Image (cartoon, rainbow, N blue to C red; front, side, top):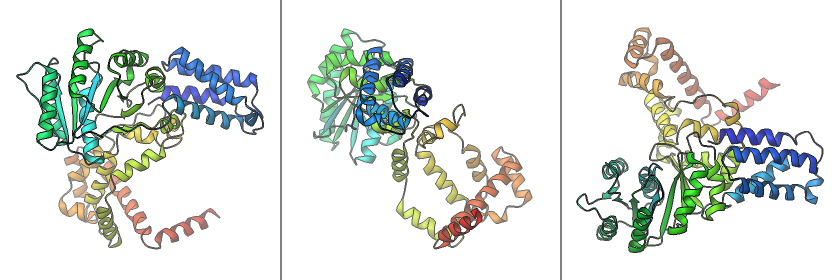
Length: 443
C-alpha cells in the first residue's frame, strides 16, 4: 500500500540530506515536492497546502536550526504531522450496549458486507464477544446469501427475513433476536447504492433512529481516493457516523482517503481492511501508518500479528520435538499455516523497515508456500515423520504427485535440513555457542 506515495516522499525528503542546516530555501524546495506527492496521492489541494505550511513552521523553528542532521529531523516532523492529520491516536469501537449495536453504512461495492463479517470475526476472537450479523440489504441480488456464506465461514449467526422488504423492520427484529438468544453484539449490514441519493439516506436514517446503534461506521473503498472523502462527507452530514472503515488497502491505493478523510469529516478511521481473508482486519493506528508511508515499516503490528498466532502449548511441544530431533514435515507445515494466518505476504513484508524499498517492483505471490505444501502433502506419513527415508525413487514419486520437479523436492529437503540443524543449535546453550562461533568467524 502507498508504494507510489512512499517513493515520492522519500525523494522529496532526500533533498535535505547532506545539508548542514535547514534554511528557508531548502525547506521550500523539499516541501514543494512533498505537496506535489500528496496531491498525486489524491489528497485535497487545500489539505496538502495546510499540511506543508505546518511542517514549514515547525522546520524553521529555533530548535531545528541547530541540528546537524536536518534530513532526519524533517522526516520526524513530517511523520508527526502525518500522524496528526490521520487522527493522532487509535480509536476503539464502542461496545457499551447490551447488546452493542453497530450499524454499517456505505456505497455499493465498498466491501461493506465482507467487512461486516471481518468485524464480527474480529470481535469474536479478540474481544471474546458473541456477535450476530443482520442482513438488511433487500435490494442487491444475493446480498442475503453472501452474508450467510460469510457467517458460515466464521461460525457467526446471521439473522435474515427473506419475505420482508422493510429494512427497518428487519433491523428491529434482528436486535430482538439477539436479545433473546444471548448475542451481545449486533452488526447490521445495510444496503448500498451506486451513488448518494435521498431514498438511500432516508432509509438508513430511519434504521439509525429505530435501533439507536452505539456505533455507526462508514465503509469506504480506499482505492476511490478523493471521491471516497466526498462521499464520506455527504453521509456524515445526514447520518453523523462515529468512524470510518477503509477497505482494500492491500490494493493499488494512492492513499488520499486515508490521509485526508479525518480532516474533512472530523471522524476517526477505526479499522482497515488489508486483504480478502476474514482475518485481514487491523485497528487503524495513525502513527504506525505514518511510519509505513515514510518507509519505516511497522514492526509493532508485525509482532502483534505473530503473537496472535502464537500458541504456548504448541510451542512447548515443538521445543521437545526439536530437542529429541523429532522435528518433521508435519511440524513444518504447521509453522507455514501460522505464517499464512498473519496476512498476505506483501503486506507483511511492508511492515519490515526498508523491505518495501528493497522489494519495489517485485511481485510477492500470496501462494508463495503453495508448492511447498503440495510437496509435503504428497509425502507418506513415514516420510513426513522421518525425512531421512526419502531416497531417489521416493523423490521422483513426491515430485510427480505434487506437480513439481525432483530439483524442487531436493531444494525443500535441503532447506528443511538446514533449518532443523539451526533449530537444534538454538536449544539450550546452543544459541550462545552459535553466536560465539559466528563472532570468531568475523575476526
